Length: 341
Ligand code: PHE
Image 1 (cartoon, rainbow, N blue to C red):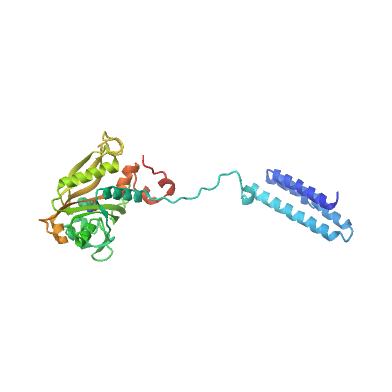
Image 2 (image 1 turned 135 degrees about the horizontal axis):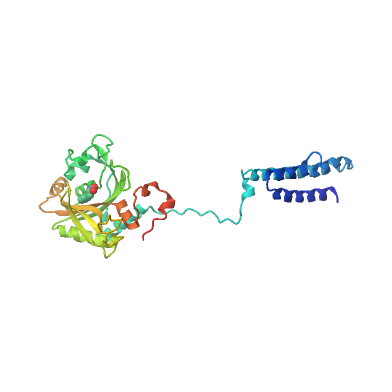
């Protein structure tokens, strides 16, 4: 066996011995067996280099040094694996499944906003928009809400500057639209609204609301009921029952809250509907004559109805989850699990 064959054989044996060393002590024994000063096999080979003819020495020396470097690197890599640090290279497991690529998806609230707008589009409502920073005239005064009304109180509303606030509902869009166009009007205005509410399971300081408005000659409460009943049946299912409870909003008269029969139990009573069989989905009412006067309409000629709902609340009903905060944490692993039952 010449020196080159000897080195190759030694290297193969070294690779096996190093890979087979299961503890740091075993690895140290392998190291001594190869590189130990007294009886290391590579050390012995290197010591023998001096006996070679002078013209063979440089090439043989270089080959031996390469073997030493290689064996030292293998020993170091194995040592760090055994120490738990894990040389990345040594740990690659080619049988592992590949990493999944992220696929973007629309947020459940966006999906619900689009779905609501699509249902209302089928009933003749066009999308409209308004600014998120509003004057208190549009947000309150024009909507028949005096600034000393509790809703206008500083405790309920953020202010950006004197007289300017992030709108606390989408109702100002009613006023902006009626100022710009003449009846007949049928619009739905989705957008973000802001409130100084505690951030808990059912409230958020910023959320998506949808405002609906229909104005024409001869519109009555029966139109409100018929439109919103059809809306609820299309959104929640054809068997859905609705009920309207008297309520109060300064900008509608009469005013109502609309409930739908619980989508989970169908009305029998369960934990999702707090045993009532009903789920509240929106506020609504006939537009107050004072609002029409502020818009420059003749309230003797025109009547209309308006409604407002929170997209997150509807998403919670449709997707069946109990905590609104989930929609804000934006943990994709959770959001991905929200599917319509
Ligand atoms: N603006 C009301 C709210 O913030 C909802 C509403 C809109 C009620 C339109 C009646 C008419 O809750």
